[in-house]
Length: 541
Image 1 (cartoon, helix red, strand yellow):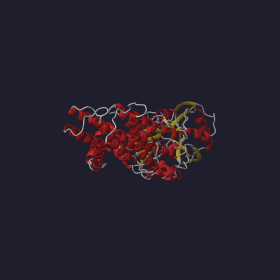
Image 2 (spheres, helix red, strand yellow; image 1 turned 45 degrees about the horizontal axis):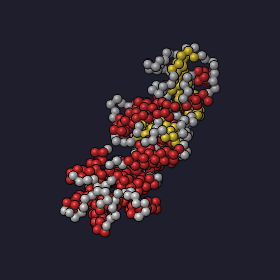
Image 3 (cartoon, rainbow, N blue to C red; image 1 turned 90 degrees about the vertical axis):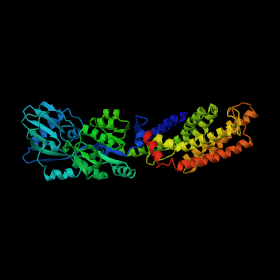
Image 4 (cartoon, one colour; image 1 turned 90 degrees about the horizontal axis):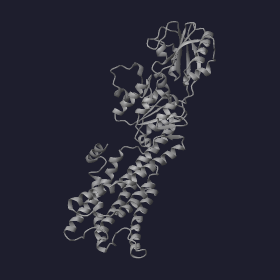
């Protein structure tokens, strides 16, 4: 009853996909993540390091009226030379502004994804703050700064105050000194990757902690559908429906780590399969919540350890290759499993019939082993390596059983008719080396070959070759075993009698009945859109 070869076939199929992806510099840390990614219909991307190259550079500094440029340079240099912050943003600032020792640090508040600002107090009592515009400036920014933000450039404000600054209290009024413009080039293949995901029916959501205007501009340049409809998550009302928001918008800015997780959870509640990419510790909660978690090689150690997939070159465009490998494995194995489950289902049905009628089980283990090898293992193994990037629209177990059930039921029907004919004295009892055993064994082999034929449709050169060689191989193996039994080694391998002419005639009749039964069931009760198939999917999903 056990499709024992299926477990090995799935492992080999997934391993082959992992080997193929390693050539694309993708590290797969979870064998079954390929299966998860094959079902993904929503891909959540962080802006930095995915849409962009992750190479932040300071482009320019715009000073506010009344700012002392020389003092600004000294304070900024002192701030950067003494800060403990070392993320990509502060590395870009350190490369642009020369270090200085003019002012000595007495206290500091490191950068936080929740606060969106960093502060340092100097020995003269002044506190310099660097952070997001909406956190440091309650007033609208000058038009010159807003135009750069709308062009996709990241803006950091630098302000100073002599009043105390704490984590718990709101920021005091600041004197704004300058706006620092930071650019991060969009990846050259970002637009092509977005177009591919759109064509494959995968929705893309950009979830970033940066300013939503900036994120929207970059997403639009990368070709993300609906990029102009963005949401500032820092302004989200307490009673807002996260489920509706996750479905409506494509770009989310100023997202906290907790909100990233909540968005993934909302997409799950909408019955989506979600893949999440990230590069920092602020992405960990969302990465662990996603169905398939993906980290970039340039990201933090924590993100790489949590993720199921690591893009070693930090090139998210290879995700289309990952998606194709996952679909290849799932699609091919789902079709192959339809052949494996024929034996599983008819074994269960025949056992039930034998128990009800007190009849012996008609086969011996060695006969089933030949079915396992020639009809199940051989064609499924080679078919599993065939390219198949079609979108996965079904679940594995319900679809495999739906494909196998008509063949299995047709065998059970023929066995029931055999029991009636046996009771009428027309056919003898089954058992080793009997004509009934030969008839039924050749019948299940024939119906199994019909299952291989169904798996191989529509035909191409490979599938046609597998179908023909499976049929020839099965009957040739049976004939060889019977010949060895009676002529050369006299070894009874299959424990099967040589079929007589009348047995072969009954075989043709049973095979024709099985074919008709299978076709009627496949086109009615077990159609993909039938009510029974829907109940089967609901029951097994």
